[in-house]
Image 1 (cartoon, rainbow, N blue to C red):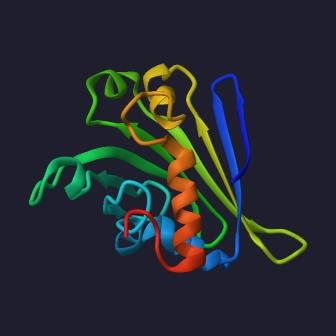
Image 2 (image 1 turned 45 degrees about the vertical axis):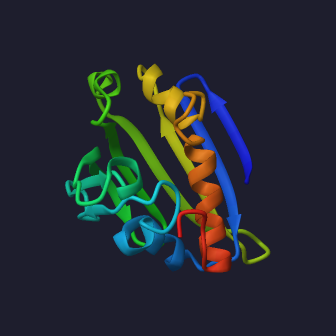
Length: 164
């Protein structure tokens, strides 16, 4: 993982992957893959502007058979294999839900060596509780974006992540 920068209200991560852009896109938009890295939750996504996004708690988080939405959003931009931007609101925590939606952007590119770059920009303006969670500053919550992106890289490069 490289390039973690935080500007006032904005968190930016960039990682370099030995994976094709379409594989990165799939890992961001397909539930069968989101269940295999990070916190292991499935998603429902309609990857077009105006489409809905929902992230669900994993079984490890809440127990078997529970289908709990923990993140809701709306797709702002969707360019397959290049860019996905959405609103992102943590609904499972009342303090974070009260902050309203933040903006999350995934930019997928390639560098001169042929490596795929994934730049994740999370605009956290006015959302201090959400910022504490996604930066990994909230104890017992697992490491935030650094954890998720490290595990995504592991999954795409080795076929296995921490989650499975």
